[in-house]
Image 1 (cartoon, rainbow, N blue to C red):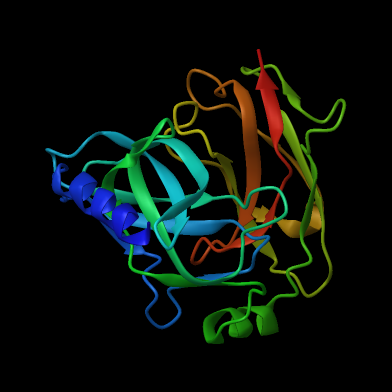
Image 2 (cartoon, rainbow, N blue to C red):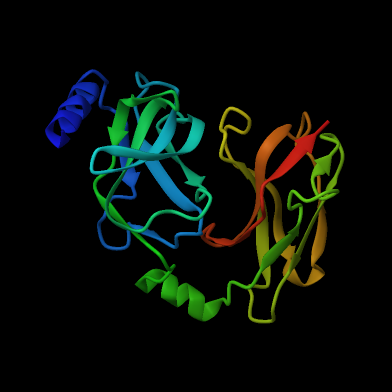
Length: 240
């Protein structure tokens, strides 16, 4: 049975251009996933002849576990995206892979596959431990959060982002709009830079043409230095 699965995988890969390459995660050093409840990064490279978009599927031992992102724009020569954990968090353990596939409905048409990597339950690696020493990670996004009256209504209107923090949190951060469905939001949008964390609330203004509309949006509060995520909102909806 397992041999048949790997044979099918080989044939699927052989039929694609194989020019897509998953760069992260790849199982080397700290290039695994740390934190089952944290959004995780996937990065790749590509060439012009590759398909323009793809879906991201988590697999283990040749079996598809979950579709993590849909309609991801491959970019001109590659890019990266953040994938959020499924309900209950990412599964933990070894021998996981990320596949870039044609679509969520065609997960066996594989453009690229990562090396095996490990998913750890907790966000502790050498790099992350140093980050935790300097930041308590206590930032918490309180709006928008998907509850009643805490979505965004009015794609052309300024919207409110609010949060809580503790004294040991970073002084400033950037606010980023993201969506797991890349057909709605092809790439993350930076809505505000160098926000003073002590304000606990700020207005963000729509980009030219207004905010995109739909569901599955999240707000990330990210480091102004390296883009690491301090806090992420619950999913919310943006309506006209």
